[in-house]
Image (cartoon, rainbow, N blue to C red):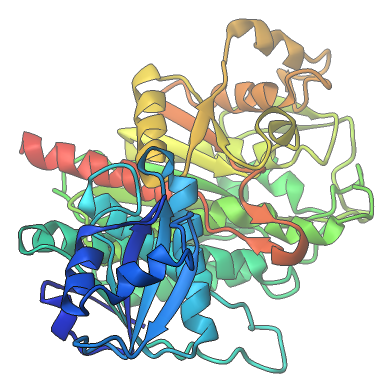
Length: 500
């Protein structure tokens, strides 16, 4: 699909479908009023008959309107202004493109007068609209014998006022990049564990580096990790025939001497729980346990496409957690790259084990900030459900920046505490630290574990277990947290530009 920003008289615009808005209680937006005037009140007559009230997501297709060049005019309900949240925005765009698909339309022009969201930020509205539109057209077919039919819709034009064109074009370009990153993250997450292995993730990272001059990639195999003393990460994959990998993706968009911002993704490509075996029900969903890694990969694609003027390093700790005669056992003690020892009381608490060595490894980059992203705990779903990810951090400033970025990107998060009182729950009689802290505050103690390996830099942890994939009829990876990560990096790049 091709996106375009235009500014023109919509009454003379040639298109298969022209979309205009109707607010609650049948109020026409400015563009709809101009169109109604051109067709001599034909649209208002339809509203007077009660065929559409303007409820959010309502659609009504009109044909053969006099003095209008468009083949069809689609009236789209926008609801009341104060209720047009990001969630409603998403539902409106979903309803719009659902109607477009059902009519087999190849070209559409959308003139909604920046009314699809309660804010008046045309950049943000265009960006979210593009992201939501692309998400609606995503189809997984990689492992199906019958491939998905390509969308009939080829051209999407957004009509804006002449003084909004520049901001709207910026929103379209950035929204397309973020949407592409989300699609990559979704595709990786949706692939089954027999295809998307640690080695497969390495290949994808190498392909990414081949596609951009300012990206380079390094793969550390098990021998290299053993040499570095990354025995905690290696312990997770000992029961699997698939070799573990540490994937390092370096994006160089800033000055050579500028400190990089580092993203660390949990890449457990399948998690059986190991010897602490998970229940069989829904275990197939444990292919999604690498969605943190997928979000890092998607974000690196997006920032390369946007050409952000900053340095970013993506690190993926990839392993497969399987039970076997060689698997790590409950009660085993391993030594981390930092030199700290860990008593592994539960082999299903493996995400923190791969991450802790990766978090020690990134010290060598002298990072400005480090953010790890992981489907780390089921406990976060109990706390926050499937709406928001959890953020925990040793830096108030970094936590606040992430929360602000999540609000703007419609990829929200909520902060949980990392108080010292929680650390004692990780005490062990046989090692420096245990890898679980008991049933209480499970998401917090998991982050407390990671915090012990992040004392040399500003760090934040995003637990995305509740939002990384959907269940039921729409089962599949979501592509989150690509939007929040991209927004954080975009904000940071803007600050860097202002300081130069």
